[in-house]
Each structure stands twice: as C-alpha cells, then as structure tokens.
Image (tube, rainbow, N blue to C red; front, side):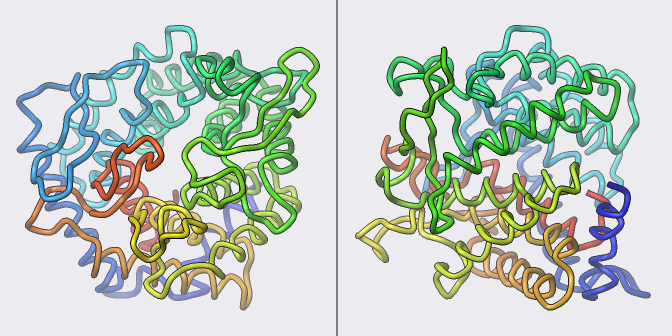
Length: 396
C-alpha cells in the first residue's frame, strides 16, 4: 500500500506534471485560479440560502444554480462541500474553509439514519473525507465511520455486492448493482484502515470482483446495471438504466469503472485491479472524439448530434492522473498526457466562464429520462478541480 501511494505521489516527478522551482505549471495554475473565481461567484450567489441548500445544476443558457434542499434522497450534496475543500486546499483561504465546514456539517444527519441507497460514499466521503484529510478533525472521522456502517448494511452476501437502489428492486427485478457504486467502495476501504470494521475491505473487494464479472462485457465496455436474485445471489441479467441501450456503453458508467478500479488498486495492491483499470481505460480512450470529451453514450446512433458529457471527461481525467503513476513507464506517460489533454479541452472549450458560475458546461445527467441534458452539473466541477489538484501535486 505504501509503495502504491508513493508511486502516485511520484507522478509529478516522473512526468513533470506539476510543481517545479517556481511553483505549479502555468496551465494548471491558470485553471485552478479560474476555479477559485468561480467558487467565489457561486458562494456569493447561494450564500443567503443557508447551508441546507445545495447547488445541483445550471440549465443551458441560464446563469443561476438550481438549489436543492439537503435530503437523504439526493446523491449530489457532497460535491459542493468537496469543491470547497479542494478550493481551500489550493487557496488556503480561511473563508472558504469556514464555508466548507458549514456545508459539510449540514450532511451529518446522513450518517445517523438507515441507508436510503448506495450513494453514502459520494455524499459523505467527498465532504467529510476531504475535510478530515485536510483538518484531521476527529468528529469528521466519526461521521465517515458511521456512514460506512450504513453503507455496509446494504451488502448482500449471496450476491456479493452492495445493493444500489432498494427502491428499484421491483422495477429492475432484484438486487441491483450499478457501476456508480464502485466509487462508494473508497469509503469502505478507508474505514477498514481507520478504525472501522476490518471486514469492510473484504466487502469492497467482493463488490469490485462481482462488478468486474457482471457489469462488463468481454470487449471491456460496461453495463450500467447488474441484477441478481436477492435470495440466491444468482446473476439474472445485465442492462442499462441511464445509457442508450442495454448493449451500449454509457460514457459516465465507463468513467466510474475507470476511477473505481484505479482506487481499488490503491487500497489493495492487487494487480488484477490495475490490469483491469488499464484495460477498460484503453477501451474508453480508443473511442473518444478528437476533443477528448465523450458523447453521453458512445453508441448513440445520432452522434454527433447529441449531447456531450463533460462530467465523464472530468472523472476520467482525475482517475488517469492517479493511474499514470501506478502503470508507470510509457503507458503511464500516455495516461498522464491524456489527462492533460482532457483538462485542457474542458478548460478551453467547456468552461462556464463569464456566462455562469459553474466550472464546466455541457454535462448530461440522465438523458433517457430527459433530465439535465447539456447542463452544468456540480459533480463535473468536483472531478475537474480534483483532476487539477492531482496534476498540481496534491497527495489526493
């Protein structure tokens, strides 16, 4: 584990991607400065609403964040406090830290109620996880461990995975596990190493293994959903929920897989996760359009006349910075170069700029449901600034 973390930290040295004698590379500085300005604009816009309201999206052509009340039924509340923690990490601005603490604290109740679905990792680890990493506040650690307990309660030993959507068991036909759930494993791995139940690491590994088996095709493309018999654990079918079709590759689903298996290697050192992360990454990269930002689904027959998904590009860019250190050599250098191309393309061609306070435009939330098509969405901003910090040498 220590060797793996050292490898990731060495990315900036091995590939010259970040801090040099006079500071960060100018490009990364410029982009992080831009994020700091946009963060201030968002705070100015939403501050009067209070910590119980969370920015979710901005519609095309609009300049105002849609705010949602913090609720167990939403999965995006952790990204805004996460953005604030990342901005604080870059700027050192105590006002930003105070805001991060306020928006983070509004989520504490999530750790004390029964799990509504699998999104606890997104909600709690993006907020409290970054807060604990930067402050060492023991109260933050306690919330993370309590949330890990709630997440683990969704684990079905028969299926070997965590139930993603209890509310969708009837509509999907059983115990369902979606690709997004890979990201929540980070909280379980972390909890197992930081005072939580040691078996949480085995739950996370089992989930990753079964997802590898049933959420991917032989050609390394991903299904969004795998469905299991809740009693026997027998795999019933694999399908989509947010992609174009059961046989298509939904861009953000593949992105979650790339990010998730890279993270699994960080915690376990198991080569199968590294090899698999590289395999599904290579498939994703081979299908990208020239500007490195995918269409919402790689198999939509209406391409190029369909929406892009900047959020998928931001997720993959962040993952590739970490993966480049683990892969090493020429392959790692190629991944790092791809990450740089992605963030540069997002900054040059997809940024909100003066038009709105979001970092990025042109993400797609749930196209089959007609939801958030070509919107700015808060999780795109989160992974964009995370990618930049990783490029700048952060210990993320």
